[in-house]
Image (tube, rainbow, N blue to C red):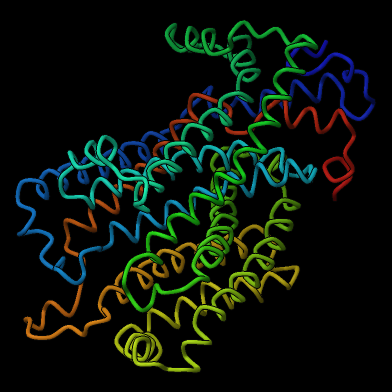
Length: 458
């Protein structure tokens, strides 16, 4: 008999037998049951990179003026803020891949939702760490909370980040309650503390009709709440730039420009994550080619939307070439940043907007290669938003050493940035070692309901 991991009234549906359910549950719990040698090596590598980042941060805090030599009065924001904007953008993966697809009833979201939500939580946490790394003095965060002024955009950012973190964690955890019961009842050879953890986190789940009703109502409310919160967090991040006196950032397009870029990055990040998880845990039966096909089409759509807002952002200033924007635009188009800029346009917009239109490019491997290009280009895009914008203030830079006109990150800065990426991957990896990375009950529910997109896709 299929247990109370799913509502009892659906267990008689002909499209999903008890045997198939048990096989599915065994497959989705397999990553928790065992960890291979390569898995241990991978975790050890990520931990080592994180420890290097911690040591680099210690050096920065004790000898800051010697290790962040390119940060000056003009370029006061460096790769940490680029990294912050990148992670904030990546955190919208949960809004797009989970919340939006749930509310619009696209049933292929089911195996993807938990992956997206874990990445979203990890990304927003690392965005906060990037801000702390950029502050120089971590104690200032305390003063920002205790003495911040509501008129300040940075206070708006703190408010929406904390709210989004809390909501995302709750949205991740509540659908996991039935999974905790599944882990408690079916995992074997696990330490007592781990089994006790599952018991506590399951909150006495028995799978009654009333419990399912409360669970699904809670998830729906949170899903509705997280969408405006997710859009708000990146819009407010855009306002941090737009309210600062730099010619590149003097734009009313910035909010939509940032959000559209975040959605494109979210889809690309999801493609990479699904590919890696699919291969690492042998979940090809659940993360199918159909999902890559759908994600490839979403990548094209998001690319065209992002191209539109990029045209709005650059075409009008380039057409006028007014004094405030001319130096900055020439620097991007034909100057020292031109290679970065046109590479971002090619790999971050044109390629994902065109190649996935070909069906063979929506297969797992080619689409993942395209997605990796988009993710890398997205990071450099945030770099191009931050650094050149600071290097072209309203009052031209003059009477300073030539080194003040340029910025290049130090080894310490790049080590800390690398550690944030390692920390995000470590969070996702450890999550998959303790909890089902794909929701058993959500996938089973989709099959029990006989959704054609899941059952009949070939």
